[in-house]
Image 1 (tube, rainbow, N blue to C red):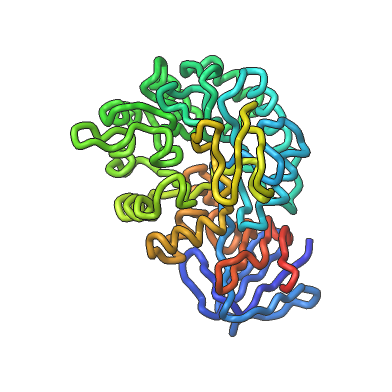
Image 2 (cartoon, one colour):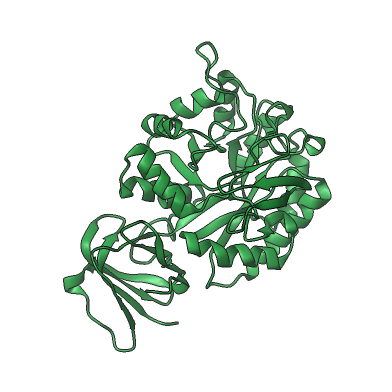
Length: 392
């Protein structure tokens, strides 16, 4: 495998930011990080020399993404997952959870079997699928959003065990409504088996969320959307997300799923210590406006949003680098905050921080080079160039 040296740019390492730094990549891993003055050029290494206008950050880990570029995890094909894995480095995502949705048991099982097999055989020069996010069908009909109600079922430990077996144990995160019958039982099983239990599409009260946390729930799916909101006599799911330090909290920062002011409110209350930026994107991302499919439903896409025929928001077309730009604009947060929300927090939540989520010697060389406008110039996935802008 080729050795790379990325030199003369700002490097946001795990412990320190080097205004003029370098990174050496050997055999797909980060071998050296430090000030550019200490860089020694190995014979045979490809040297990429930039300037202080550029910065390198750890690749984003998108824990909630359905599709991109005409492909969707529910297509249940190798081609669809490969398309997603090839496309996402363009926006700075180097790892992701292939996310399913509420559908028939047969459709979900096909998607799980396909993704589970794919994960064990995937190439190392694309974004890496690090697991599966099962979004539904164990959700509340009252907060279904764009999830089709006909296929919603009560949480079921036996059914989940079957699905986890089909997925070859690659289901890493499950969105469920803990207030539904058997919801707490499933949350306890997920905790016992090392799977993240996430509150989402839920009408739970604050007290019910407290019970879910006791049962092992540690995550909230797309804050504000598909949940009981905040009331001064009933804090609901939103109040729990604000107040309970046990919960990591997803947020879609496209300015549509929640107003910029609400992004700032969430950031100020939750902080970058618990927030995780996601895209929740559909197959329509990276495509022109038009009509596309989501779980057998028509979705209308314009330049900014995706909706069902009745106007219900149906996922997003948000790119991760735009999520970064928007979040910084809406909140005034720092790049250190962004790295926590896009890389460190998801890596810790998925228990892969030993190899991903920060720039540190010995970790996978999942790296994104940004220009002064925060556009993606180059992306490395496990030490290979997965995307390169033409002018770099």
